[in-house]
Image (cartoon, rainbow, N blue to C red; front, side):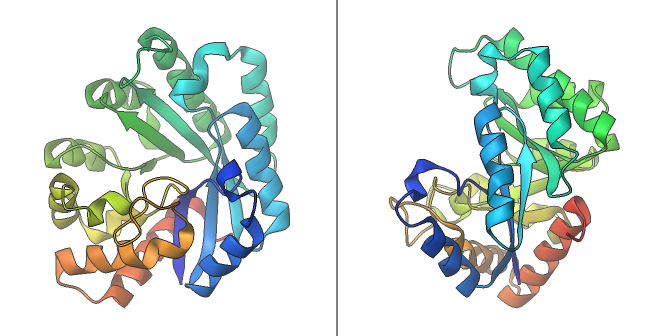
Length: 255
């Protein structure tokens, strides 16, 4: 059994074959999916997918790039969404300094606000952090995110930052980049981190693993990621599959 901890099957990239793509993922051994919101709209559509597909749960939250127009009423709506039993996390939320907009103070404000919401509703968080390691860590600490825990999605920093996030109680989301030739930094992190603190994800439809790199990503490609994690650690792929599945259950609950 494979646990997909981060996918976006509501994305328009799946509009022509969504049902078939989900069936192929299940045929590949994926039995649990977290469809992750990145805006108010996709938080809603993520919940809708949980009604449509067996094994689907949702995360609701607003990606840093989408925080420019947020207001407190949106936080009220997100809080209402968490009353749904299939909503198991707040995410994806965080900081993204790759782009200049929204400005960093706005991103920080809504990151902190959504972390506070997660603490209030007692749900784990799924963290997006790009070129913002220090600020991400500082806000996670100041907002006591260790009280709910969660995942550093698409982990992209080095071993030293990994140690800090692990010490804070977070798990690391490992996706297709670990299969890339230029993914040396992530390979080093996977070798360093205890397997009990790693979860598998695709972030589909983005960042397909080798040998599918350059194509639309989908959850059916998770076995390639699991095989690479196993290769790095000199382990059997079946063991990696089992441990990472149990890690995700520990975070999100046995739903």
